[in-house]
Length: 118
Image (cartoon, rainbow, N blue to C red; front, side, top):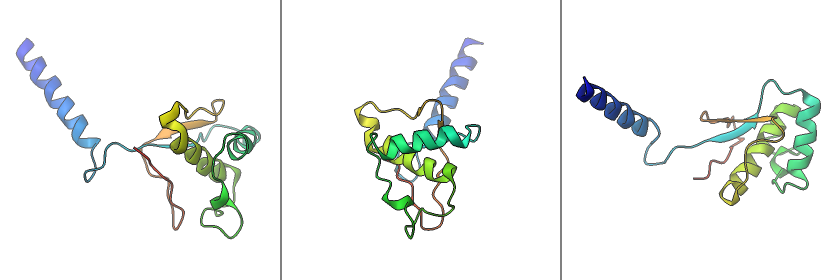
């Protein structure tokens, strides 16, 4: 019984490691706006990320690749992710006062590319 349990756990670990590796690239994650967060809270977090937070929000400006869709939620997602990728190795989190969540699904769309740093 114990041997079967150990074998099952080993297989699960190997499957998990396999799923986390894509074409030689390690597990990737993005920080995006939480669907349940009201726009007013997202706007405050977006303003902080693009201001004091130090995110590069140039790509969500008019005539830039991530301007559309022109919604607070989409712009916040881009800004949150830019901040998170830029500073996560220095201790930054994807929190934004509970306005953001981590996803393993690439939120990039059309010409708008979301970074995913290791």
